[in-house]
Amino acid sequence: MPDQIFPYKQLFAFAKNIFQKIGCSDLDADTATKALLSADLRGIDSHGIARLSGYVRLWEAKRVNAKPEIKIIHQTPSTGVVDGDKGLGLVVAPFSMQLAIDKAKQAGTGWVSVQNSNHFGIAAHHAMMALQHDMIGIVMTNASSTVAPTFSVDRMLGTNPICVVAPAGEEPPFVADLATTTAANGKLENLQRKNLPAPVGWVQDAEGSNSTDVNELKKGGALLPLGGDREHGSHKGYALGAVVDIFSALLSGANYAPWVPPFPAYLPMPAEQPGKGIGHFFGAMRIDAFRPAEDFKKHMDKWIRGFRSAKTIKGHERVLIPGDPEREMEEKYSKEGLPLLDIVVKDLTDLGKRFEIPFN
Image 1 (cartoon, one colour):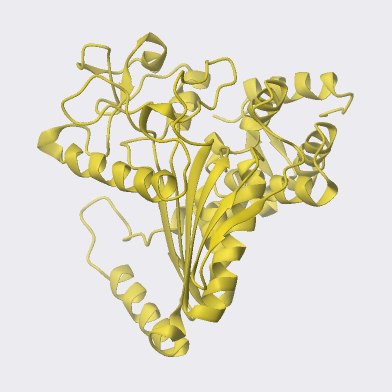
Image 2 (cartoon, rainbow, N blue to C red):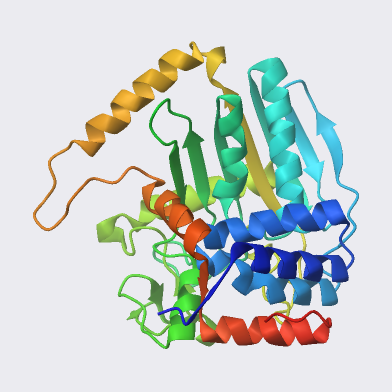
Protein backbone atom coordinates (compact mmCIF):
# COMPACT_ATOMS: atom_id res chain seq x y z
CA MET A 1 0.00 0.00 0.00
CA PRO A 2 1.11 3.61 -0.57
CA ASP A 3 3.04 5.05 2.32
CA GLN A 4 2.78 8.80 1.86
CA ILE A 5 0.28 11.32 0.44
CA PHE A 6 1.37 14.43 -1.45
CA PRO A 7 -0.69 17.40 -2.68
CA TYR A 8 -0.97 17.66 -6.45
CA LYS A 9 0.46 21.20 -6.41
CA GLN A 10 3.60 20.03 -4.62
CA LEU A 11 4.25 17.23 -7.10
CA PHE A 12 3.45 19.53 -10.02
CA ALA A 13 5.93 22.18 -8.89
CA PHE A 14 8.65 19.58 -8.31
CA ALA A 15 8.22 17.80 -11.65
CA LYS A 16 8.00 21.06 -13.59
CA ASN A 17 11.21 22.29 -11.96
CA ILE A 18 12.98 19.07 -12.93
CA PHE A 19 11.85 19.38 -16.55
CA GLN A 20 13.08 22.96 -16.60
CA LYS A 21 16.42 21.88 -15.11
CA ILE A 22 17.05 19.56 -18.04
CA GLY A 23 16.37 22.42 -20.45
CA CYS A 24 12.64 22.43 -21.19
CA SER A 25 10.99 25.79 -21.78
CA ASP A 26 8.43 26.94 -19.24
CA LEU A 27 5.60 26.00 -21.62
CA ASP A 28 7.01 22.57 -22.45
CA ALA A 29 7.74 21.84 -18.79
CA ASP A 30 4.16 22.77 -17.94
CA THR A 31 2.79 20.59 -20.75
CA ALA A 32 4.98 17.62 -19.80
CA THR A 33 4.10 17.87 -16.11
CA LYS A 34 0.35 17.95 -16.78
CA ALA A 35 0.65 14.86 -18.96
CA LEU A 36 2.85 13.04 -16.44
CA LEU A 37 0.70 13.73 -13.38
CA SER A 38 -2.54 12.97 -15.21
CA ALA A 39 -1.49 9.34 -14.84
CA ASP A 40 -1.15 9.61 -11.05
CA LEU A 41 -4.46 11.45 -10.78
CA ARG A 42 -6.22 8.70 -12.71
CA GLY A 43 -4.65 5.96 -10.58
CA ILE A 44 -2.21 4.82 -13.30
CA ASP A 45 0.81 5.39 -11.07
CA SER A 46 2.96 3.11 -13.22
CA HIS A 47 3.08 5.92 -15.81
CA GLY A 48 3.15 8.90 -13.47
CA ILE A 49 5.76 10.74 -11.46
CA ALA A 50 7.47 7.42 -10.65
CA ARG A 51 8.82 7.63 -14.22
CA LEU A 52 10.25 11.14 -13.87
CA SER A 53 13.77 9.92 -13.19
CA GLY A 54 13.47 7.63 -16.21
CA TYR A 55 12.85 10.62 -18.48
CA VAL A 56 15.85 12.37 -16.93
CA ARG A 57 18.05 9.35 -17.62
CA LEU A 58 16.92 9.34 -21.25
CA TRP A 59 17.92 13.01 -21.46
CA GLU A 60 21.31 12.24 -19.90
CA ALA A 61 21.80 9.48 -22.48
CA LYS A 62 21.08 12.09 -25.20
CA ARG A 63 18.06 10.15 -26.34
CA VAL A 64 15.66 12.96 -25.37
CA ASN A 65 15.91 16.48 -26.76
CA ALA A 66 14.63 18.94 -24.16
CA LYS A 67 14.31 21.70 -26.75
CA PRO A 68 12.79 20.00 -29.78
CA GLU A 69 11.77 21.72 -32.99
CA ILE A 70 8.58 19.77 -33.62
CA LYS A 71 7.71 19.88 -37.32
CA ILE A 72 4.93 18.83 -39.66
CA ILE A 73 6.85 17.06 -42.41
CA HIS A 74 3.89 16.02 -44.58
CA GLN A 75 0.21 16.84 -44.59
CA THR A 76 -3.08 16.92 -46.45
CA PRO A 77 -6.26 18.71 -45.28
CA SER A 78 -7.16 15.78 -43.02
CA THR A 79 -3.82 14.04 -42.35
CA GLY A 80 -0.34 14.87 -41.17
CA VAL A 81 3.00 13.39 -40.21
CA VAL A 82 4.93 14.99 -37.34
CA ASP A 83 8.64 14.71 -36.59
CA GLY A 84 9.07 15.09 -32.83
CA ASP A 85 12.82 15.89 -33.04
CA LYS A 86 13.52 13.39 -30.22
CA GLY A 87 11.43 15.50 -27.84
CA LEU A 88 9.65 14.27 -24.76
CA GLY A 89 6.60 12.33 -25.87
CA LEU A 90 4.80 14.20 -23.08
CA VAL A 91 5.27 17.33 -25.23
CA VAL A 92 5.15 15.90 -28.75
CA ALA A 93 1.85 14.09 -28.15
CA PRO A 94 -0.27 17.12 -27.13
CA PHE A 95 1.10 19.05 -30.13
CA SER A 96 0.13 16.21 -32.46
CA MET A 97 -3.30 15.64 -30.93
CA GLN A 98 -4.04 19.36 -31.27
CA LEU A 99 -3.05 19.12 -34.93
CA ALA A 100 -5.51 16.25 -35.41
CA ILE A 101 -8.22 18.32 -33.71
CA ASP A 102 -7.47 21.37 -35.86
CA LYS A 103 -7.69 19.26 -39.00
CA ALA A 104 -10.96 17.71 -37.84
CA LYS A 105 -12.41 21.20 -37.35
CA GLN A 106 -11.78 21.87 -41.05
CA ALA A 107 -12.18 18.47 -42.68
CA GLY A 108 -14.48 16.57 -40.30
CA THR A 109 -11.77 14.15 -39.21
CA GLY A 110 -8.05 14.56 -38.52
CA TRP A 111 -5.37 11.87 -38.50
CA VAL A 112 -1.76 12.40 -37.44
CA SER A 113 1.07 9.89 -37.32
CA VAL A 114 4.29 10.72 -35.45
CA GLN A 115 7.93 9.71 -35.80
CA ASN A 116 11.05 10.53 -33.79
CA SER A 117 9.30 10.80 -30.42
CA ASN A 118 9.64 9.19 -26.99
CA HIS A 119 7.40 7.66 -24.32
CA PHE A 120 4.29 9.86 -23.97
CA GLY A 121 2.75 8.76 -20.66
CA ILE A 122 -0.88 7.63 -20.66
CA ALA A 123 -2.79 7.72 -23.93
CA ALA A 124 -6.00 8.93 -22.27
CA HIS A 125 -4.50 12.32 -21.40
CA HIS A 126 -4.01 13.09 -25.07
CA ALA A 127 -7.18 11.47 -26.39
CA MET A 128 -9.35 13.38 -23.91
CA MET A 129 -8.27 16.65 -25.51
CA ALA A 130 -10.91 15.88 -28.16
CA LEU A 131 -13.81 15.83 -25.69
CA GLN A 132 -14.05 19.58 -25.20
CA HIS A 133 -14.54 19.95 -28.96
CA ASP A 134 -17.40 17.41 -29.20
CA MET A 135 -15.06 15.00 -30.95
CA ILE A 136 -14.17 11.36 -30.58
CA GLY A 137 -10.48 10.94 -29.82
CA ILE A 138 -8.31 7.98 -30.83
CA VAL A 139 -4.70 7.57 -29.68
CA MET A 140 -2.15 4.79 -30.11
CA THR A 141 1.58 4.41 -29.54
CA ASN A 142 4.10 1.68 -30.08
CA ALA A 143 6.70 0.87 -27.45
CA SER A 144 9.92 -1.07 -26.97
CA SER A 145 9.70 -4.80 -27.60
CA THR A 146 8.75 -6.64 -24.42
CA VAL A 147 5.94 -8.77 -25.87
CA ALA A 148 6.15 -12.17 -27.56
CA PRO A 149 3.56 -12.84 -30.26
CA THR A 150 1.43 -15.95 -29.86
CA PHE A 151 3.51 -19.15 -30.24
CA SER A 152 6.84 -17.29 -30.01
CA VAL A 153 9.58 -16.66 -27.42
CA ASP A 154 10.98 -13.65 -29.29
CA ARG A 155 10.03 -10.19 -28.08
CA MET A 156 8.63 -8.49 -31.17
CA LEU A 157 6.07 -5.90 -30.00
CA GLY A 158 5.55 -3.38 -27.22
CA THR A 159 2.57 -3.05 -24.90
CA ASN A 160 1.17 -0.81 -27.67
CA PRO A 161 -1.87 0.81 -26.01
CA ILE A 162 -5.06 1.98 -27.69
CA CYS A 163 -7.30 4.71 -26.30
CA VAL A 164 -10.73 5.73 -27.62
CA VAL A 165 -12.80 8.45 -25.95
CA ALA A 166 -16.28 9.74 -26.72
CA PRO A 167 -18.26 12.57 -25.11
CA ALA A 168 -21.64 12.11 -23.50
CA GLY A 169 -24.27 14.62 -22.39
CA GLU A 170 -25.16 14.37 -18.71
CA GLU A 171 -23.07 11.26 -18.15
CA PRO A 172 -19.26 11.25 -17.86
CA PRO A 173 -17.40 10.53 -21.11
CA PHE A 174 -16.53 7.07 -22.35
CA VAL A 175 -12.75 6.57 -21.93
CA ALA A 176 -11.30 3.21 -22.96
CA ASP A 177 -7.51 3.18 -22.43
CA LEU A 178 -5.87 -0.22 -22.59
CA ALA A 179 -2.63 -1.95 -23.37
CA THR A 180 -2.79 -4.69 -25.98
CA THR A 181 -1.04 -6.97 -23.48
CA THR A 182 -2.59 -8.76 -20.51
CA ALA A 183 -0.84 -6.16 -18.33
CA ALA A 184 1.33 -3.13 -19.05
CA ASN A 185 5.02 -3.31 -18.16
CA GLY A 186 4.45 -0.54 -15.61
CA LYS A 187 2.25 -2.90 -13.61
CA LEU A 188 5.13 -5.35 -13.41
CA GLU A 189 7.31 -2.51 -12.16
CA ASN A 190 4.73 -1.72 -9.47
CA LEU A 191 4.72 -5.36 -8.36
CA GLN A 192 8.52 -5.27 -8.23
CA ARG A 193 8.34 -2.24 -5.91
CA LYS A 194 5.88 -4.11 -3.68
CA ASN A 195 7.78 -7.41 -3.88
CA LEU A 196 4.68 -9.25 -5.15
CA PRO A 197 4.35 -12.01 -7.78
CA ALA A 198 2.68 -11.53 -11.15
CA PRO A 199 -0.63 -13.26 -11.88
CA VAL A 200 -0.48 -16.25 -14.22
CA GLY A 201 -0.96 -15.10 -17.80
CA TRP A 202 1.02 -11.87 -17.57
CA VAL A 203 4.50 -13.13 -18.46
CA GLN A 204 6.34 -16.14 -19.85
CA ASP A 205 9.92 -17.24 -19.28
CA ALA A 206 12.65 -17.46 -21.92
CA GLU A 207 11.40 -20.91 -22.96
CA GLY A 208 7.79 -19.76 -23.32
CA SER A 209 6.38 -21.28 -20.13
CA ASN A 210 4.03 -19.40 -17.81
CA SER A 211 5.76 -17.53 -15.00
CA THR A 212 4.81 -15.39 -12.02
CA ASP A 213 8.29 -13.87 -11.67
CA VAL A 214 7.98 -10.09 -11.95
CA ASN A 215 11.66 -9.92 -12.99
CA GLU A 216 11.16 -12.31 -15.90
CA LEU A 217 11.87 -9.65 -18.55
CA LYS A 218 15.35 -9.22 -17.13
CA LYS A 219 15.93 -12.95 -17.59
CA GLY A 220 14.94 -13.11 -21.26
CA GLY A 221 11.23 -13.68 -20.76
CA ALA A 222 8.38 -11.68 -22.29
CA LEU A 223 5.05 -10.08 -21.60
CA LEU A 224 2.04 -11.86 -23.11
CA PRO A 225 -0.50 -10.39 -25.53
CA LEU A 226 -3.99 -9.62 -24.27
CA GLY A 227 -5.61 -13.00 -23.58
CA GLY A 228 -2.49 -14.64 -22.18
CA ASP A 229 -2.54 -17.77 -24.35
CA ARG A 230 -4.09 -19.03 -27.59
CA GLU A 231 -7.00 -20.72 -25.80
CA HIS A 232 -7.96 -17.39 -24.19
CA GLY A 233 -7.53 -15.28 -27.32
CA SER A 234 -3.90 -14.11 -27.21
CA HIS A 235 -3.89 -14.10 -31.01
CA LYS A 236 -6.39 -11.22 -30.81
CA GLY A 237 -4.16 -9.24 -28.45
CA TYR A 238 -1.22 -9.96 -30.76
CA ALA A 239 -3.24 -8.67 -33.74
CA LEU A 240 -4.26 -5.50 -31.90
CA GLY A 241 -0.65 -4.80 -30.91
CA ALA A 242 0.39 -5.26 -34.54
CA VAL A 243 -2.29 -2.81 -35.70
CA VAL A 244 -0.92 -0.18 -33.30
CA ASP A 245 2.60 -0.75 -34.62
CA ILE A 246 1.46 -0.28 -38.21
CA PHE A 247 -0.57 2.87 -37.50
CA SER A 248 2.05 4.43 -35.22
CA ALA A 249 5.27 3.57 -37.00
CA LEU A 250 4.91 2.24 -40.51
CA LEU A 251 2.66 5.17 -41.43
CA SER A 252 4.98 7.75 -39.88
CA GLY A 253 8.50 6.44 -40.45
CA ALA A 254 9.19 5.59 -36.80
CA ASN A 255 10.88 2.42 -35.59
CA TYR A 256 8.73 -0.69 -35.29
CA ALA A 257 8.63 -4.23 -33.96
CA PRO A 258 11.88 -5.18 -32.11
CA TRP A 259 13.68 -2.03 -33.32
CA VAL A 260 11.73 0.44 -31.13
CA PRO A 261 14.07 2.22 -28.65
CA PRO A 262 13.70 0.95 -25.06
CA PHE A 263 12.46 3.23 -22.28
CA PRO A 264 15.17 2.30 -19.73
CA ALA A 265 18.20 4.39 -20.68
CA TYR A 266 20.61 1.67 -19.51
CA LEU A 267 19.37 -0.73 -22.21
CA PRO A 268 21.26 -0.47 -25.51
CA MET A 269 19.57 0.92 -28.58
CA PRO A 270 18.72 -1.74 -31.19
CA ALA A 271 21.58 -2.22 -33.64
CA GLU A 272 19.23 -1.65 -36.56
CA GLN A 273 17.18 1.54 -36.83
CA PRO A 274 14.74 1.26 -39.75
CA GLY A 275 12.99 4.46 -38.67
CA LYS A 276 13.19 7.39 -36.27
CA GLY A 277 12.39 7.10 -32.56
CA ILE A 278 9.07 5.93 -31.16
CA GLY A 279 5.85 6.32 -33.17
CA HIS A 280 2.38 7.55 -32.18
CA PHE A 281 -0.97 7.87 -33.93
CA PHE A 282 -3.71 10.41 -33.19
CA GLY A 283 -7.23 10.72 -34.51
CA ALA A 284 -10.01 13.25 -33.96
CA MET A 285 -13.51 12.79 -35.38
CA ARG A 286 -15.95 15.66 -35.29
CA ILE A 287 -19.26 14.17 -34.25
CA ASP A 288 -21.29 16.65 -36.27
CA ALA A 289 -19.52 15.35 -39.36
CA PHE A 290 -21.75 12.31 -38.86
CA ARG A 291 -24.82 13.51 -36.94
CA PRO A 292 -25.76 16.43 -34.66
CA ALA A 293 -23.50 16.33 -31.60
CA GLU A 294 -26.39 16.82 -29.16
CA ASP A 295 -28.22 13.83 -30.64
CA PHE A 296 -25.10 11.69 -30.32
CA LYS A 297 -24.49 12.74 -26.72
CA LYS A 298 -28.15 12.13 -25.80
CA HIS A 299 -27.87 8.60 -27.12
CA MET A 300 -24.50 8.12 -25.43
CA ASP A 301 -26.27 8.95 -22.17
CA LYS A 302 -28.90 6.32 -22.95
CA TRP A 303 -26.21 3.81 -23.93
CA ILE A 304 -24.26 4.41 -20.72
CA ARG A 305 -27.34 4.25 -18.50
CA GLY A 306 -28.35 1.02 -20.17
CA PHE A 307 -25.07 -0.60 -19.21
CA ARG A 308 -25.19 0.87 -15.71
CA SER A 309 -28.60 -0.72 -15.15
CA ALA A 310 -27.50 -4.15 -16.43
CA LYS A 311 -28.01 -6.94 -13.93
CA THR A 312 -24.76 -7.82 -12.13
CA ILE A 313 -23.34 -11.17 -11.17
CA LYS A 314 -23.26 -12.10 -7.49
CA GLY A 315 -20.67 -10.17 -5.50
CA HIS A 316 -20.56 -7.13 -7.79
CA GLU A 317 -22.52 -3.96 -7.16
CA ARG A 318 -22.49 -2.43 -10.64
CA VAL A 319 -21.36 -2.64 -14.24
CA LEU A 320 -18.54 -0.22 -14.94
CA ILE A 321 -18.28 2.01 -17.98
CA PRO A 322 -14.75 2.35 -19.41
CA GLY A 323 -13.20 5.33 -17.64
CA ASP A 324 -15.22 5.02 -14.42
CA PRO A 325 -12.42 3.79 -12.13
CA GLU A 326 -9.95 6.38 -13.39
CA ARG A 327 -12.46 9.23 -13.15
CA GLU A 328 -13.34 8.26 -9.58
CA MET A 329 -9.65 8.07 -8.69
CA GLU A 330 -9.11 11.54 -10.14
CA GLU A 331 -11.95 12.97 -8.06
CA LYS A 332 -10.54 11.34 -4.94
CA TYR A 333 -6.87 12.21 -5.46
CA SER A 334 -7.62 15.79 -6.50
CA LYS A 335 -9.14 16.32 -3.06
CA GLU A 336 -7.04 14.07 -0.85
CA GLY A 337 -3.61 14.14 -2.54
CA LEU A 338 -1.63 11.57 -4.48
CA PRO A 339 -0.29 8.40 -2.84
CA LEU A 340 3.34 7.44 -3.49
CA LEU A 341 5.21 4.33 -2.40
CA ASP A 342 8.24 4.83 -0.15
CA ILE A 343 10.56 3.59 -2.90
CA VAL A 344 9.19 6.24 -5.28
CA VAL A 345 9.55 8.96 -2.63
CA LYS A 346 13.19 7.94 -2.15
CA ASP A 347 13.83 8.01 -5.89
CA LEU A 348 12.30 11.49 -6.22
CA THR A 349 14.18 12.74 -3.17
CA ASP A 350 17.46 11.54 -4.68
CA LEU A 351 16.54 13.12 -8.01
CA GLY A 352 15.80 16.42 -6.28
CA LYS A 353 19.19 16.39 -4.55
CA ARG A 354 20.96 16.00 -7.89
CA PHE A 355 19.25 19.11 -9.24
CA GLU A 356 19.18 21.02 -5.93
CA ILE A 357 15.37 20.95 -5.82
CA PRO A 358 14.07 19.77 -2.43
CA PHE A 359 11.34 17.15 -2.82
CA ASN A 360 10.03 17.39 0.75
